[in-house]
Every structure is written in C-alpha cells, then in structure tokens.
Length: 257
Image (cartoon, rainbow, N blue to C red; front, side):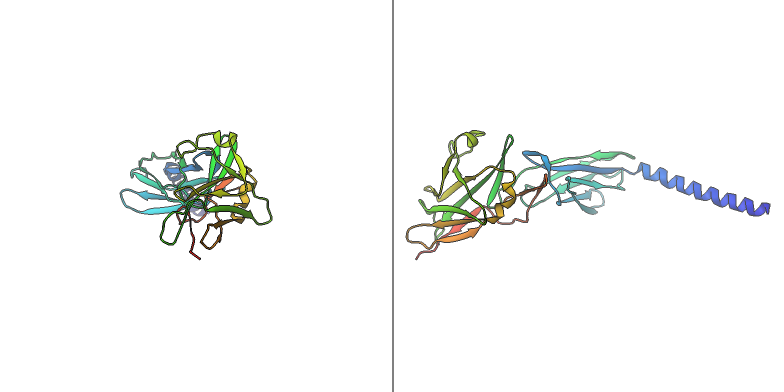
C-alpha cells in the first residue's frame, strides 16, 4: 500500500513539475501586437487587412488579419531573432518595419498609420470633424488626348446627389477652404487637361452609399457614357474597410460618333 502511495506521489510531482516548466516557458516567449489606423482617421481602425511577420534570420513568414478594432497580434516568437513587419493593403501605400528586436517575456507594441494611396474613383479626405468625398478624374478621346469642356454629372440610386466645386490654389486643395468656399452645381466641366474634380455633400452616413453613384459624361461629337463609381475606402460602424481596388484614378474614354 505504501509503495502505491509513493508511486502516486512521484507521478503527481512529475505532472506538477512539467506543467510549471511549461508555464514558465510560456511566460518567457515574446510577442508583437499593435493597431492599424488610416492616416487622417485617427479614431477609425483599419480592419480585415493582412499583416505579415518575417523572421530575418530564417526568412520564415506568418500572416494574420486585423480585427474589427484594427488590432493584430503575433505570439510564440523568438527573442534572439530580429523581425520585419509589413503591410501591403489595397487603397494604402505599403509599409514595412525591419529590425524589430524582442525581449523574453515581453510584448512589443508596434502601431501603423497607413497613408492613403491614389487608387479608386472616390477619395475620402479628412478635415477636422468633416469627411469629404471627392471625385477626381480625366476625360480622354480614343487617341488618349484630353477632352476639355466635357460635361460631367452625377446621379444616385434612390438618393439625392449634391455636387460642389472645390476652391483651389495652384491646383492644390488648401485646408478648410474646401468647406468655406463651395459652389453647388448640377454639372462640372473638364479643364484644358480634361480634368474634373467634384466635392459631394459631407455626411458620414452618406459615405456608406457612395458605391451607388453613377457618373455621366458627354461632349459634342462624342457618344455619352455612364459609369458606376467606387469608393477609395469605406467607413462602416466606426472602422475603415479598404476595398479590393487595383485600378488607378478614374479615367473615362469617349468614342467619336
């Protein structure tokens, strides 16, 4: 009987010893975590984008996606190897951080503030408390030459669309003057380079329905064209969701009649 008790006590000791060793090891394993935000949208995280971690010694990679709060996390890493973290998300410029050194038992906090890329039909600009949807594009003929004085109109599906002309200085947008000096219009005309630029009504709620807009373009001697437009990025329930956009800025080609 005493022998059985001794064997049981040794067995129990081994289990407790091994579990304690595992707990100690897990506490010594470093990790990396952070939050991904969009530049100019400091209170809006970017969700559902891939974050890739590469071991700069072994070249092994692992990828996770940010959650609805823009948070990503890598666990069970090595403290002796430097790491590189990269993000290449549609609608944003690529970001990479190299030489990230970890310490045993610690979580390294690395946040990203992604810069907007010039892709998509509608770009969302941030000025103070306002979010401005701005449509920029160019109208060309079949020979890729710009068409000046072409008419550009917007229409919405089940919604009233308000268009504004932006104030400019040397072709660049100047801060809050966009909000102070806007002229409501029914159509805009392309300039000598075939460029047009439109501000839509400023509404955070309205941003959710920008994909329902259509743009109509016409010019004397050319066939009119109608095209659905897409947003540069979407704002939904307090977080930024980048769409899968691969094309460059809005370009419309008219055919001769």
